[in-house]
Image 1 (cartoon, rainbow, N blue to C red):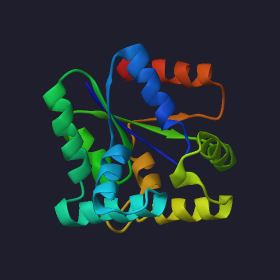
Image 2 (cartoon, rainbow, N blue to C red):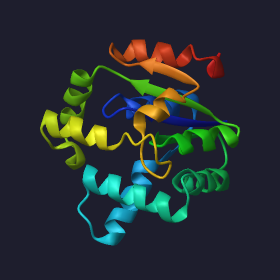
Image 3 (tube, rainbow, N blue to C red):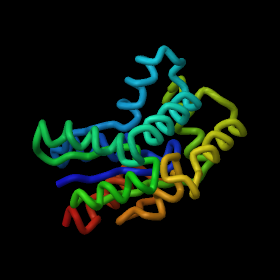
Image 4 (cartoon, helix red, strand yellow):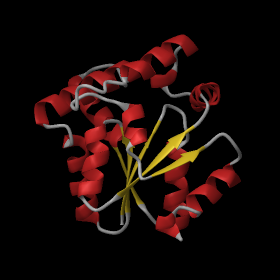
Length: 181
């Protein structure tokens, strides 16, 4: 089984990934990790602005599903159930579906998401709430399939979970998805 995972900043994608690895035996492939590898290779600072610039550049040069296709190749080589995390473009969601996969979207209230992002202490999230919201808006490009569109990707998800509650509530929502029942 292949699952794509999309969601807004700080919604809990990593938490869903951890659960699927630990409880369902999935192998994890991170689009953010893949992009970070390229950022480091280019000698750029690892932050959200670089993530946006480099991922959009890779999609423009190699096609809108390049990141997903690259991670899918890795998953096929390893075998087993795979979760590809951090789909950021509508074309990426559609590519997972073309490959026979399903896509889970994760969202939460923006204030909760910002609080979570700050708590994880990632360099890419070390900004004010206003800058964070601005960066999120920069990832909403509905008219260009080579650019990020996180809310478009969320809208195209097969399943959506709201992560405004407890960890147990999130796990219950995941377990209740038709792909796991």
